[in-house]
Image (cartoon, rainbow, N blue to C red; front, side, top):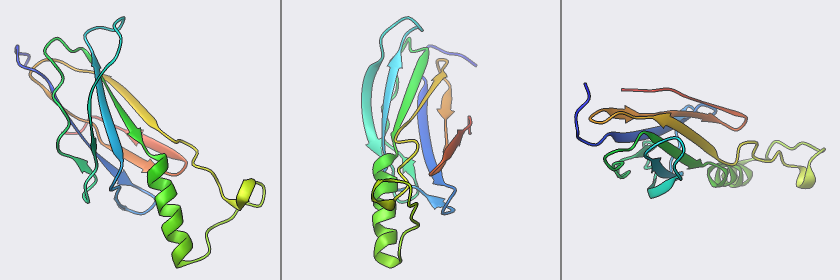
Length: 136
């Protein structure tokens, strides 16, 4: 059902390699009123201990497209540093320093929105891939 009210957007991140929420990931939200318009960054949030962003801004009236940008490289870098403290990290002798770099340093998800609807877009994340879907 479409009304004149704004759309709303939420997200959460599950680190599927650990089977846990991904805490501490910065997520920014941008919007545009049509496919030819420039993106306008509306704000950012950081995932909490449950991997959720509870304070993303609402897109303005007239928004047709939203983009969520997930800065995942710092999250994986922190996980790698914590793993090194606990046990020797997995090393790949073919890479500089012996460590496998983060393959996807950021994830950008663009989707269409409609007024009056809520859009929950979860990110399932691991070091070498990701998946998204429209949740509820």
